[in-house]
Image (cartoon, rainbow, N blue to C red):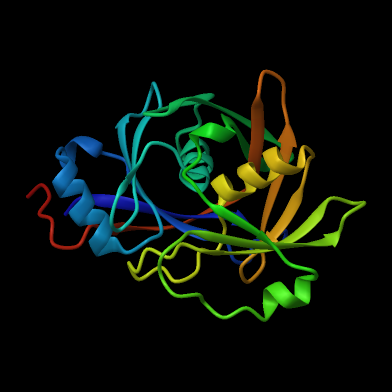
Length: 225
């Protein structure tokens, strides 16, 4: 069977939480878009990455129901896994660097998929939210400490694809950083951590801690004898 990696991206400071990411390192083993979409749906992660060129960092990203030209936690996780200094996505080239144990990417806000950024008055209000009905991708957030740039957030994809709440969403953190015009430290979901910063030439940096889980076989797909 075709192997795939499972990473946890944007883990908390102690290695807790993080958003699970599936990475099929041998993208050629699943060559067609329809086949890739079927694998992503079967795996059921918020995103699954297919690596088409590990040296150049060419990747292809899928949710359980659609293909994405760019997404944050897949780029951070795959950048860490491949050890490259850039990734090639349909949206553009994503810079990758490492600092203090974190993996950070640089991307443009207009590469990110649309998100509704909805501010609340307190972190407690965000914590108390129920999952909204499907329809729009909602990034609910509130300041924990505005002076310090710390944010509490939760992400609700609204796609009705089995992912009711996204544990950690790099693209949404990128969009919020662009809107607020400042560096942020975001605690999302059950305790995942995302850090962001403004860079030159319209680029925004998003990053966090990545950890690996044991490799798993892709369900229902035969591999070498």
